[in-house]
Length: 188
Image 1 (cartoon, rainbow, N blue to C red):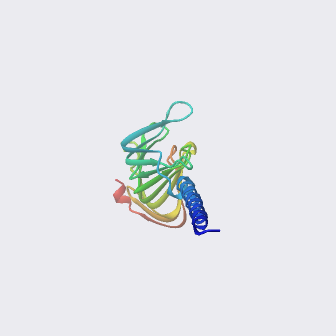
Image 2 (image 1 turned 135 degrees about the horizontal axis):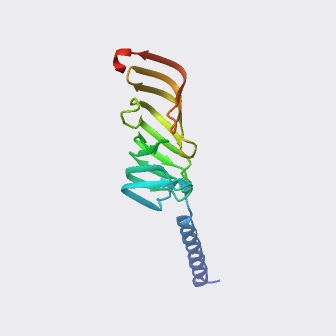
Image 3 (image 1 turned 120 degrees about the vertical axis):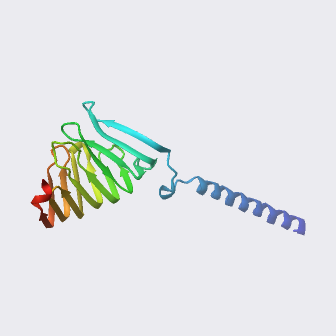
C-alpha cells in the first residue's frame, strides 16, 4: 500500500470521527435539562383574579414578576400579594418575598417575610400574623405552617410554633409552644 492510500484512509476516518462527534454534540445541545429550563412565559407588574367552580372570586394575585415553569406548569413569583376573600367577600392580604403556585392553583407557597392581615372594617378586630413560610390551599380555605408565628390583635399578642387558619371563618390555631400576652386596656 502506498502512502497516498494510507493518508486517504486516515483522512476518511478523521472525517467520520469528527462528523460523529458533531452529531453527538448537536443531540446533547437539544436535550432538555429539567433543572435548566427557561420559563415558557413571564408576566410583569400584573394582577390576576381567579374564580372558583361557582364563578366567585377565589383569589387575586398582584406581583411585579411571575415565571411559569414548563416542566411542571408551576409558577414562581417575586414579591406576591394575594387577596383571599372571606365568607363576606372581605379580603385577607398575604404578602411574601417569594411565592410558588402549583400547576392547578390548588397550593400556594409563600416564603420569606410572610405577612397576613385580616380584612379591615369596624366589625372585626384587626388580626395580623408574621412568619417565614406559609402554605395556602385556597380550595380548602386553609393556611398553615410549621414555622414560628407571631399573631397580634388589639389587646392580644401570641407567639407559637406552627399555625393553621380557616380563611373563610377567620378561626386560627397556634399549634405548639404558645405564649400569649393579654393587655385588656389595649383592646379598647
